[in-house]
Length: 318
Image (cartoon, rainbow, N blue to C red; front, side, top):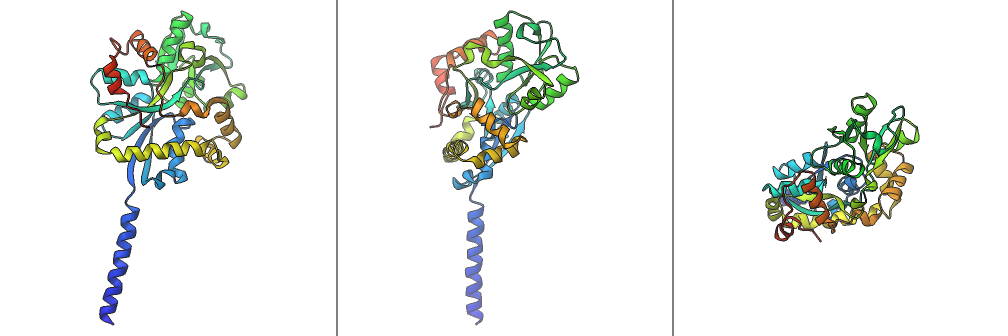
């Protein structure tokens, strides 16, 4: 009996060890994301909560930041594995300065989401009215930074571009009178527009040059990619599976609504009005030449990258 008991105990111990080993088999991946609540920026969290990344042997931890520049620095320093929602001009500039960084996918192509607004009682009603005012962007090198600088060029006006951080912090500064014009991206700001608290002054989509450009990207440190090649491959398989689920299952809207802090109806509006599925396809990078021209024009870079440098920087994960 004693021998049988020891044998049974050994089998049970091995079984428990096997289960524990299986539970610990998932590879952890940390993703830095700016602007919590954006539809496309919610892909990692949605996929994790739905169990899609777990199916691919991954445990994704999402770290929300104040913007693309902060996420980019975390990637460069290897504090995280991947950065999402990064301004491509900022990524190019960092690469040109020797930073270990690669653009590995697109977060969003086409700037249909970003808008700039003023308080309802403000005299600012159109882009030209921003002359001489303080106009916000999230962080240096971000897509909002590029758009704000483009406003100056397009409308031939001068104003003080002002770094204000995330959309929520920006809203507080606008409503308190610290900043004249704030930036936002759905879901943030839609309810305030509908209720009449703020009015839209300008949109990123007003800049024709941005229409077919990739405006936010996914980035990684090349050393981390080399060390974790299989992990990145599984991440992108799960990422695409998550995107398919987000456009096919009503449950995705309910879960996104919880993450973004909006109603299911507002979640559907955000997806259907601002995010065609094709705009968040990761295996694309459009308008590289125009992005580089803007990066040079706006002082992010001294010169455009060569063809060879661009091919080294952009390594899209299929």
